[in-house]
Length: 260
View (tube, rainbow, N blue to C red):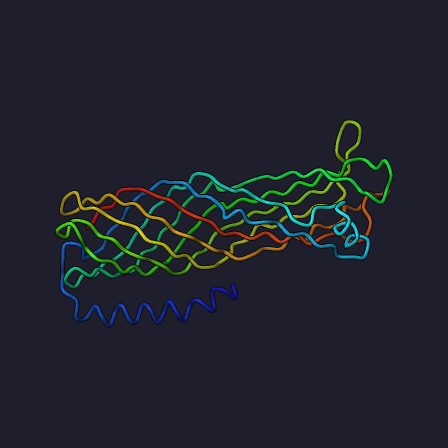
């Protein structure tokens, strides 16, 4: 929530500026409230999961490669959602605010097999990392210009982003027929951040619009406590590990809008 507290004054100032300009704004074919639906594709920014040990034994395991210090996550998937907004227009300049929310299927699971070089003949160690973005919402300002005789709007946009991030880590030792979990942890949090992008809209008639947009989002990082699994016979040494996931990526969306 710290990122939200930093962004909130900027958003409030931007909204106040838009309201001030709106007092002098003319009406126009792009002015007024609108809504829309869209679908598309989301892809992560090839972010890495970085793992560190919590105790000397765990720190040594990461340093030796018995547990992976860095694992690449290649998240991607379907996105789809709805948007609402309000435009004001002065000449060929269009400005306003928009909010949207998307269901997302942006996820990846990465499994890395390692061995403990300090123990001769040690079994394979299995390390599984999972990351998913379950939904993504934004609250953005938009500023654009009309072209093509006023029928097409080209704009830039930016503001607040928020989303639900699910992260899981499981570290196991392989047995002949199964993997015995030694360390595990998970988080399921709503995070906030920022988004920047742009797009274009084309008016089919006085109300109907075709839309296309690109946005880059950054929801910061989330650290999972990968704790040792308690058992009668200790399976893992030390306390555990910290695995830090970064969540950022790209959205490509197309849809249909309707100006009320």
